[in-house]
Image (cartoon, rainbow over all chains, first blue to last red; front, side, top):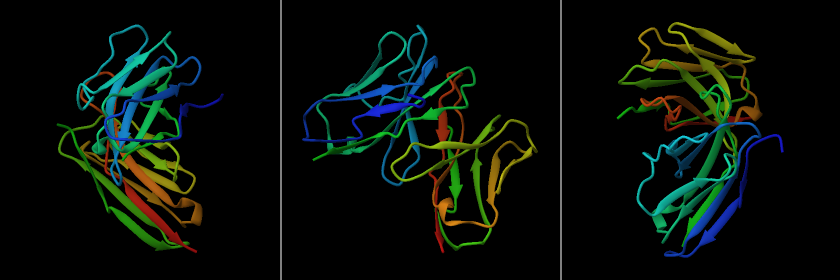
Length: 113
Length: 112
């Protein structure tokens, strides 16, 4: 597709379950970012991938959060043993050469009951 | 850490009115970005500012990069109903990874 896609668009899960969120960046974009947006808040950086370099995981809030990017394209954000405070919209963005021009996907709305 | 403070938090205006919102920081930013987020969508870049004092327009939108590099404002002239959404300022974080620091957002509602 032409833009960044994310799936699922909505995910409802029970506390303690693991979830996987997927991001398909724009074809050819080398950098990929995950952000979290809590209700009424701005976006909070989680993790950054650039090519084959080691990812910048400095924004991950706990060791329950992890992400991988396979083949330099698709990325999966995994949250283990979900907690209610993990409820948020998780947004993915990708960029080409200009890292300030980030193209965002529509997000995955995660609700932990 | 770096933080961006946006104001106002929300605005409710009449169609046709002009709107102004701003963003301040305690630290210097070398780039200021303004994004708009529609409900159920990801943010979309509206305007990017790269030079202190720069004034840039995009249709009815005008944004300025403050001289001190610690603030920026966004103006919307002659608002229309489709201007409804959340407006975010953003700037690059202190690392060179390109991660963005976002303000808390200004929610704009336009009454027809």
